[in-house]
Image 1: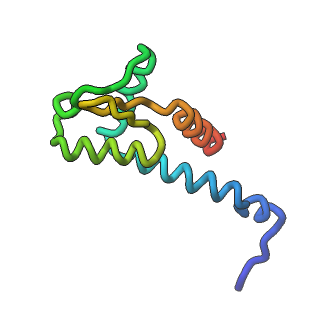
Image 2 (image 1 turned 180 degrees about the horizontal axis):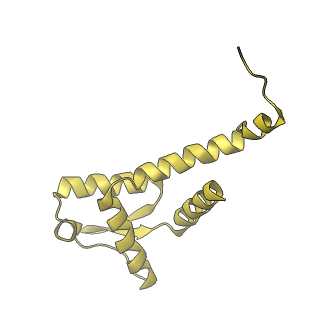
Length: 112
């Protein structure tokens, strides 16, 4: 026996904007799903407040292999949380404030 859906069910239907926001939220949340990536973001946010960027080696700070750190940086970059600018001989990593603002708004829309 199936139940008919009342008008309250209409409110539960997702529109295309909701679906797009949910997909973006999931992508960003996945990028933050590892403690090392959260730590990297915290480091970059603090450096940003000082007007700098990260061009030092994170391996010692995180206690992870270079290849693992590189993969974490790649994931954060693909998600848009960070940017990378080559400043030979290293890369200069910066936080992307627009993306962190977007993520905050998505979290707020989820809990409001």
